[in-house]
Structure formats: structure tokens, C-alpha cells
Image (cartoon, rainbow, N blue to C red; front, side, top):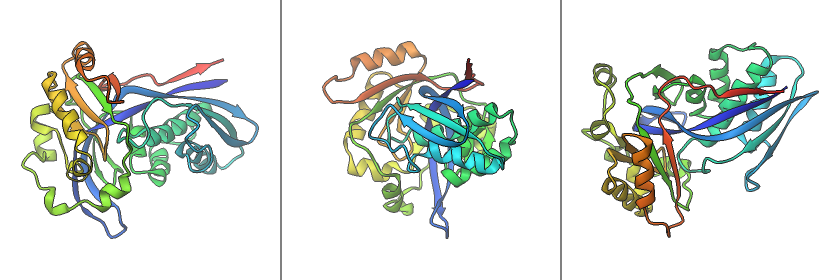
Length: 291
């Protein structure tokens, strides 16, 4: 049996950096939501060991790829021999602030757990995910969430309306590590910073809550991001924000039709990749068995 697993991207609807930890990580407070932009992963059981092929030949297919590392960590946790051949069909832009690599790792963990009959609990999978990357636990959680700590503390957040996102991915990549290294925490104070207590009393509202502390770094390096945000607002977005450390920018629209109209109106000569996707605010079937 082969499994087909959809591996979704995410956007940060807000992202606040609270401080730097002694271990070098940063404490965050963020509202994260998956979107209907997917990589596709095929998992085929083998006698022993894990291998990876990928549609994007620029990506590593060794331990430099989180998907393969996730498979090997799963078998270590399983405590008995197992194997899988992984094929990763990439659609989510790489190094773009959309969490594609973390999502791939989480999807491999969830898929393998399904293949082997569910031997590991969600809590155990999240522990494995945390060892792979800060965003992996969120993708294992499979719901919009308030995320804190270094990404390992998750609380379901049901107050996101069913909006649509138009994601604009520029041609350049951004190093998350470099963004955090250059972040000046004294510049991240914002009156728009939401609190957990406030959010529990009200639903997410784009014009009130969209905020990303990391924009202070990435926008200074890449003014093109500012232009993209302005264009999305000009085309009727309810709000626009850089996702994660960037450089991808998203605008939120009432529905996919409005997002499509906005995409058609954007300049076509900039080399930008455009993706229209709904916010995944409810449960979505992501695993399909292929005989």
C-alpha cells in the first residue's frame, strides 16, 4: 500500500518575538494557520531503511532534507525495523516563510504513523517534531493554533473566519537564521500586538491583528516586499503581511473569487509566483491510501 499525503503551507497571522533564550532560540507568540497550498508526498513501504526522491532537483535528498530525517526519527522511535521510499513533489516555495520543509517533516511522521497502525501518540510525534524544527509541532497539531515558546506550546484557536489568501512569492530567498540574528528586539514593540486574553474574547480580525515583528528586518533588506503589500491592499485585501521570516507576502480576501481577481490585476513581469488558497480553519483529509 502507498500513501498519498498532502503537505500544506502555513501563514503567520501574527508573529511576535518576545525575547532571546539562553539556548539561542527565541520565544515567540504567534497565530498560525495552514492554507490550501500543498506539496504532495508519496510513502511506499520497503523492507528496510528510508530513501527520498524529489521533483525539485535543487533540494537535497539526504539528511539535509527534513522529510528524510523525519522518517529516520520515526523508525528510531518505533524501535523495530521498518523502511519507506518517499517521493516529494514540491509546490510550496523553498525558504519563503511558508513552512514547507517543516510541513513535509510533519506529513512524513503522520503518514508513517498511519502506515504502521498508529503506534505513536500525537504527544510523542510532537516531541519528535520539536527535535526536527520549530514549526513541525504546529503542522502535527493540524489546526489553527496560538503558538508560543519556541513553537512547541500549542493551543487550538477556533476564531479564524473562512478567508482566502493570495500569496505572492518573490524570486529571492531569505535566511530565517540571518533574520533572527539581525532582529533588534527594541524595535519590535507594537500596539497591534495581540494578547492571549484578548484573542479569547474576540475572533481574528485582519485590520486589528495582522502583525509580524520580523518585518523590521526583512523589509529593510528587500523593499520589494513593501511594494507587494501595498499592491495587495490596492486590490482590495482586508490586510497584508509577510509570512514568517519572508519573503512571501499574503493578502487576505473575503473569498477565493476575490483573491483570483486580485491575482489577475497584479503585474505579470516581476517573476513573482502567485498562489490562491483558502485558510484551513477546520479538519481536512490529508492522507489517502493508494492500493
